[in-house]
Amino acid sequence: MDYFQPISGQKVPIYHWDLPEYNSWTFRNIRRLFPTAEVSHGSGNESLFTKDKRNLSGLTVFDRKGQKTTIDRFLVDTFTNGFIVLYQGKIIFEQYRNDFTQQHTHLSQSVAKSLVGTLAGVLIGDGVFSEQDLIVDIVPQLNQSGYADAKVEHILNMTSGVQFTEDYFESDPSISDVAKIDIACGWKPKHEAGRYYNSLYEIATELSKARAHGAQFEYRSIETDVLSWVIESAANRFMPELLSEKIWSKLGAQQDAYFVLDRSGTALADGGFCATLRDYARFAQMHLNNGEFDGLEIVPHDWIVACRKGDPSVFNSEPFISQMPNGAYRNQWWIKDVNQSIYLARGIFGQMIYIDPDREFVAVKLSTWPQPANSDMTMDTLAVLDCLSQAM
Image (cartoon, rainbow, N blue to C red; front, side, top):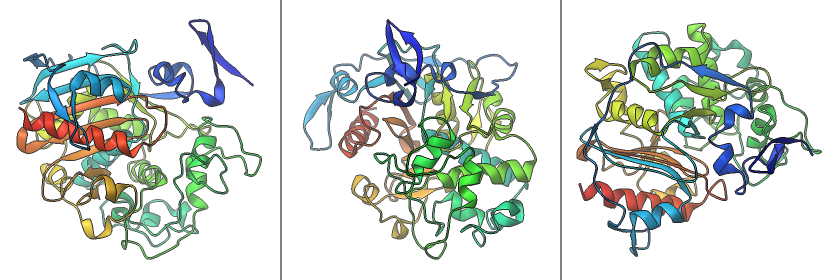
């Protein structure tokens, strides 16, 4: 077994870096573990938050079962490393745990999808490509795959008919397609039952079509990687560079962010983005401000509004329908309830950006759960953030 460098005298097994005994350290030290590409924050000054700090640690809130807890207890029980709350654009609460600090970056897993979706919105607004374009007209390498007759809107909303199994608890790539992504990124070793993958794009070319496009939402990480391939091919630029130019450098971010790369040098668009807690909050506040930050329009207003509206009739897969019974998915964002305006960016192991435009409320939670997916913790987090938003 190979190991990463020791931490506090303890070695980290290279293919078990995300296990609970290691992940609170590894999620904030990804750059020391895997190859990455920079998302530059540019040469401008850091935008400064106004603060209206409140002592919310002991505030009574309610979990998914309606049982009382406190903010502090909730943060401990859900393995939180960083938590920040903005109300009307001001920081009202901020807490760091488990040696995570304001200067550290943190892996956000599938929160990355919402950043890539937002970048797609900017490029669509610029006329680089459109939602109605056929994917193969932009990426002809997919013409023998299940994406051969799919449109860009299908991967934006994860309603393509392509077969892809997203099972985080199965390492056999012949059973779980998402295991192929882990292999391609060097996160997991080649499984004895499967082949060796070097590229996310290689995986996409081999996927087949299982049903009609547009008929049903199904959460599949590879859709975001295909979206990134569309972005790079249409713009003829590396996706992390575009994200820097179009979004990150315009937020007044405190420092560079970065993407993990696969073995071929492709950015892991579906879950490899790392940034500081406050920079995630800047991105979220830009969304709450309908695409503007410090008076500058970064993302088209209409695109932001569209991210808050979805079709619940195609949103019927588990565990998501149980977590958000009237929910939807649009433009790489989760809509908590189509009758509300709350929308989310979510990642395994407990990452979340929660945006409530009606209440001018933003929360960002960076965590390291013991398991990749946990519906109880997801629903507890949603219940507590609902309480906190309503308390403002």
